[in-house]
Image 1 (tube, rainbow, N blue to C red):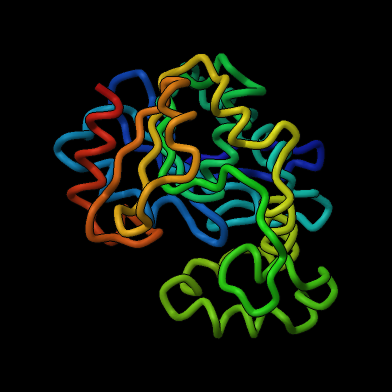
Image 2: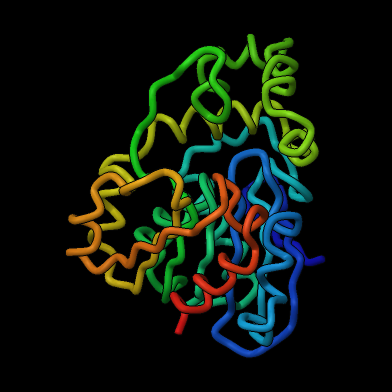
Length: 254
């Protein structure tokens, strides 16, 4: 386990690091998750093992600190991650990122281009979303005010999330979880999709085959984004079909 201070107050991002050759690979989890739980099997898969690999927990999540003074915007997450990567001596990383982590990775590549050489997004959020009371995921969390969520709304989210997601979501700070969800559904300006279209690095987007045609596929492929449908999986591609996911990531990083 490694760590770096990423705020003026000394709050620390932590990551599990596997030794290996450069370029480094950086794995970034989604909302309410933690990278070691979601990405270890991918990082050590025979098709992907051997590179220096950092399984990073974003601020407010997993093993990292959970400051209540941090805003948890996508830009804030990206800048904090950039600080941690620079402290780790990482440049030109191959970034593999899931869900909200994919949104953060897109912003990271746009704001800190020296840190990212390739981008593999796993069912990442590219567009703003509505706040939907009772929905699962970020839309449902963002439908609460922060006071409502912290004072008890989190229990309703826990019950909707189920045991699997809650097993990692419970590690996140309540303020961190709510603010991250709120800023995720709000998105960025330009949007994450618009940023992705213009990034000058190799980009791949993996999504569940069961979701059908990916929205905006033609525009993405025209801009150079490789789209790959992963069979037999839901949103958690790397957990539902780890072999197909690892193969797709390896192909994207060739």
